[in-house]
Amino acid sequence: EENAQGDEDKVYIVGTEPTFAPFEMKDEKTGEITGFDIELIKAIAEDQGFKVEVQAMGFDGLINAIKTGTIDIVASGMTIDEARQKEVDFSTPYINSGLALAVQADNEDIKSVNDLKGKVVSVQIGSTGAKKAQELKDQGLLGEVKTFDTVDIVMREVDNGNVDGTINDLPVTNAYIVKSANSLKVLENLTSEEYGFAVQKGNDLKAKIDAGLKNVKENGKYAELEQKYFQ
Ligand code: ARG
Image 1 (cartoon, rainbow, N blue to C red):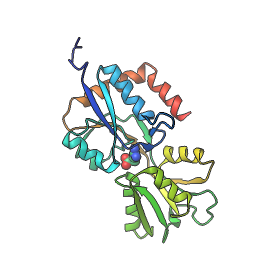
Image 2 (cartoon, rainbow, N blue to C red; image 1 turned 60 degrees about the horizontal axis):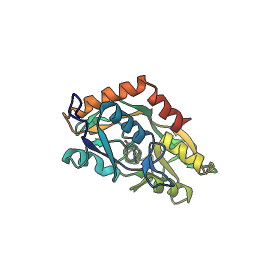
Image 3 (cartoon, rainbow, N blue to C red; image 1 turned 90 degrees about the vertical axis):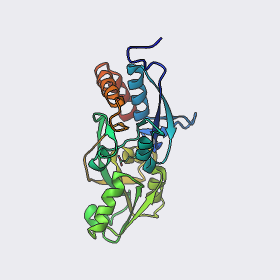
Image 4 (cartoon, protein in one colour; image 1 turned 45 degrees about the horizontal axis):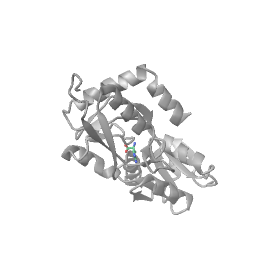
């Protein structure tokens, strides 16, 4: 039986880069992709009467995959920014985040972003962290930017001393610090950013996601997920 929108059987493909705990990651036991973003978009889908199928892909391929219709929705801790807004539509923001600089816990050399001259930082390709690092480099405030496909490698490079630090989203760096028994430390917050779900420009899926987000915020489901992933 169809609902009013006739959307009951519709399966939308959700694209994500799943090395970004607690927002999206592979469950260690089942290998399934889970996380705050994934459970939130599933709750929104349930509220709005559509289904989703989650597909892992490279972070720097997500926008193009929306444009070509390979995927329908990005749920990937994606920051709403001007450059991306030219290419896709974003839902209303679903969470606040932002970039931070982190280094090895015992690093005494680097105390802030002002100490990065001649230093090397790791970042994820296509991320706002990569953009920020490149800006610092262009201003002569940073030695080198090393770009990697996945955030697990971005973090590992700092841990094993291949790079001096990383510019990455604070909640993700914090989750890594907990998991790695404080091998790294956060020095400084660099930006304030908001995440949105991205869809093709002009697609009415945006209205459905916005309506579902509003509902799950009102009915307690959002708070439940927040509690589960950010307590
Ligand atoms: N918030 C940052 C951005 O939009 C990083 C997002 C990375 N997400 C991921 N799932 N790897 O550029």
